[in-house]
Amino acid sequence: MAQNRLKALITEAQSGDMAAFARLLTEIERLGPSSLAAQELLNASDPAFRVGITGPPGAGKSTLISELLGELSSSGVGVQSRVQRSDGVQKSSDVCQPKIGVLAVDPSSPITHGAILGDRIRYSDHALKENIFIRSLGTRGSLGGLSASAYLMLRAFDICGFDLVLIETVGVGQVEVEIMNVADFVTVVLVPESGDSIQAMKAGIIEIADLFVVNKSDRPGAEALKREIEASVAMSAPVAEFESESESESESESESLSSASSSDTTDSASSSRGVEVLLASALKREGLSQVAQAISSAQKNIDLKKNRSSVKRLREEAKCLMRASLEAEAARRVAKISNVED
Image (cartoon, one colour):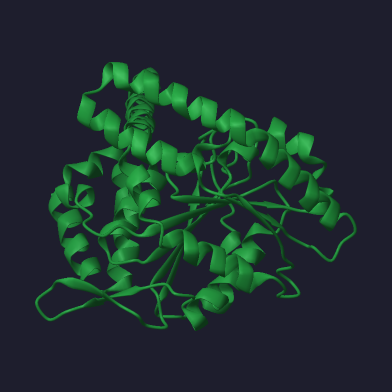
């Protein structure tokens, strides 16, 4: 019964019904990994371009995303939107209204397991726009900033005709870098108060970032932080290339020649990408066009989407879903034992 309901919601959502899409995400969150029994979630012929936006708490990620939504929605910035034809086939055409989704992940309380889901307050200006869909989601105890539900919901965005999905995480830390396993392009937001580049290197964000945005650039120290990050990126480039080659050699030992060749191609393409560092002020709406243009340019890089199907990415997603399934089953059994004792 649940699977039939899920498939019906998928059909309605693919027809453009945003209310049905909202119910679809709720159903996916309720079912968890078992929702993958609906094969439609595995067959995205033209997936959305995923942009992960992360950074320390207080960096202004939500405000930056809100302003970027206005920039991307009004100008299109080269984003191609899909048009639903009468025969049900989607095609791409240059229009000014790309279909954009936002998945804002909020931290869940370790005591009540609830989440405030307050990021949507900053997105209120876009709540009624037909081409923008915003969904908040709790981490549900996940240590990496993303829950299993996030992985599954992103698949729903892929099959329902979204062009671009912005993923906001709870805040990057030394272990909170899971965003690189789901996003095609990772934007790290920092502020002058974030500390020097050594702190950025300790958090591991130098390795995961495709774009750095120094937000609140009107504050003292913004230019200095920009220079420090650029220097750190330049120093880390040779290390990244060495690690990429080591990973390729390791994978080639366990995978077939064809898959290893594909992985090598995407890994080398990833390591050859340049990492930009941009200054912006979301509140003053300064530097936003440059950030939007960087996202648009990245979207045109076909290799970024190909990297999503690499062995490493698929393995990490499978591990997350398996862990979620085991945790859910363990919780069910513990609850059953508690009920018996009561």
